[in-house]
Image (cartoon, rainbow, N blue to C red; front, side, top):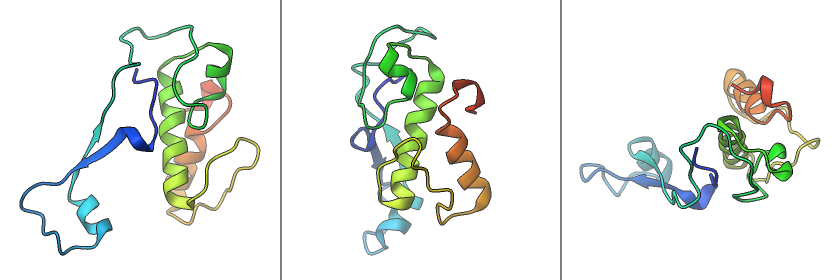
Length: 119
């Protein structure tokens, strides 16, 4: 478990053969995504502590409960922000994310308050 997934902990490694003249979106499409800052990570499958960022953290983290699906929620919150340019707040969900409906459904499932319905 990473336990602190947020935009500042996501980097892109741009291969040397990718032209810098491409648009930012094309550069990202041709790059490798890297997750960084494993200072709060844990190898246990379940932890009882409040860690990470409150904006991107799953609801259960506020109760000191953290599991692998908490990271799924955090990734969903980051994807939501990338697509809408707005922070995700539970109960104020935008159903139309302006993307493919399957991707939209996946992201909204990732952001489920019910941990058991997350992928």
